[in-house]
Length: 425
Ligand SMILES: [Mg+2]
Image (cartoon, rainbow, N blue to C red; front, side, top):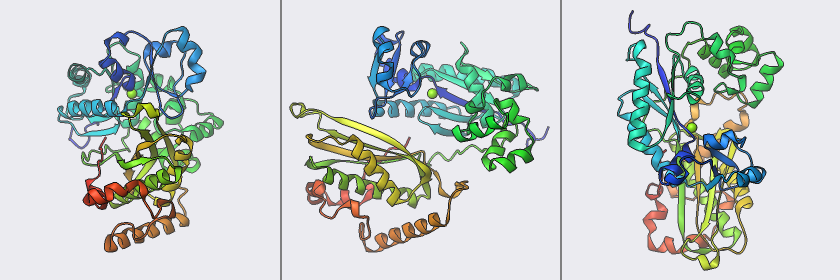
């Protein structure tokens, strides 16, 4: 068989209960206990150990709703520690890179690997080897699903999650219908709430039913993405691996203040400025962000003043790099996490879920979007020519009290975005 016709073999490596696994790594006492990790914004449960899942604690459930079960069963509860998770994520990804396959880091705890170079009969064995190595080198347990397309590898991964071995390969299985029949339509990669409702209304409840719908029906009734999903379920790869290792997945701008900040207005100006920097940065790389996180905290060394730290994430309705929208959303978040009476020492914004701006296959983008992006382009080029913040948005403030000390002590730092700490995840 020629190499062009050779089937693709895509592995999805997904860390099991990633945040919980990270906490367990440094805390052996909780290895066999039920554990949950909370988002530190509104106290939702964002990671659960299997023991916690077995107790009926739901993903995304507000902490207070699960509290009774948690107390009764002595569930260990953790606030999220993103710097720990980020570090362990990098270790896992570095380990995966050692396998010399094309690789796409898909999220903090997931990566696609292209195993097409291996013979069909070997891929399951390779999967087990990868799993063993990651466990040995990082201590993080993973599940690995292998199939002909990314969408199918996601499904294989769901099955692998429930298996002792942690590895499932759908390669070499001619008829996948019995497998796909058990996968609910809303569990299919890329099928969101709206699409689920629509498919349900049209009698499509599982992956098999979507796969067997005629392509013309799907094209007519949903969109390009819908038909891509259906093709992928048939085993025809339509979604390529995004292997560029340099491509950033997030952009963080955060600073410690020159002096403690107490007023909302000042904090708002700081956050707005970070937003401007971050959105300009991603625009310069032709990226758009799916979500924004804003975080604030007081100094951990001034506990007598009371310690407070909070963060919250909001998804943009449509991925964006529009400064105005980014600032507006950040201010909304800040309003919900800001508390009076604290001396804030640090704040930051993080744009996440970055993807190429031109790949936006959005059917709802409008003339207005066009106008906004041309406005953004002219802001960028004016600032480029005449110096940062020549053109800005009103919320960014003009006094910048929060920044004063820095402004005098380390000018290069504030003037040059590239000196700001950024993380790549
Ligand atoms: Mg996971």
